Length: 398
View 1 (cartoon, rainbow, N blue to C red):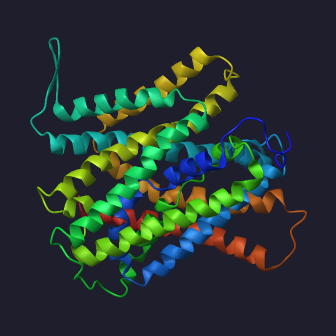
View 2 (cartoon, one colour; view 1 turned 180 degrees about the vertical axis):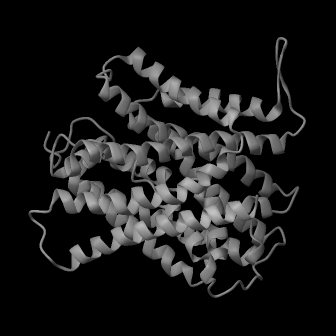
């Protein structure tokens, strides 16, 4: 089908926007004040730059998909550019990033629910399950039905919950500062050069949705307006992230935690709402993360038309993330390390080099070419320096 012709079926503009914003506005909303504290006030300029770059590389992915009607996923773009090896490389980075994020969500659910209910235990006959492990299993059961949804039009209703939960968390933090007595008195620092690599890695993580963008694009009823969807999603998320970063940093300064909700005053209504809402956000994003992986498996084995097999595949993926979250409870440290490397690669480096390869015969030396090469170099630099910095911090805190 010609990508420039509207389809009779597919996701509408509004539903696509909800899916896009939900993809971008995730748990990064909790760590963005910490990112600002690491880089200082001047790093806000880098935050805006990263947002613009990631939006632009999203458009590069769209151009690659428009060049060939058979291209439907991110790995397809890699194969179009570099053959089978390109597909393999993109698959490794893309699916590992998505899969690790899904596992991290399960760990986050277990940790936060256990903190809220530290004395809880689960009994299944003679089998006794600890509170933390029981909450991970419970979260897995709750989120499992959403993974069976193959239509992003239906999944958009789940995405609405994710978007609203992000907005509620921002409002709760603002409420704590303005009404609950915390105030906005911290001055912060202008710039912290040592913390710039960490700040950049977290900023890139906040705008990392490129692994899901092709899936969202191919699900649209009218693909010609995808660029408008992308602009709107990035503008809204930039405003939301920016507001959270500024108010969180003004409230707690250099003492802000990697999860700003941990700084909120104990016992206040705003704090309780923020924590409970934080638990909702991962549940609304979980299906969006696993969908590209499930779709790839179904397409590879030509099982997309078998509904029962599709449900089994998605159920198996969900179960595997729960099992890993249970058996590797400290997996979050590994995710934090690989996230700084995978996110910058998937959002900046791979889109740039794939685009340059696909359009190598039509590209001429000009300003856009220089910009794309610079973005690829910046993505590689963030990946290397961010990974080194993360490793160093982990070793120092062992």
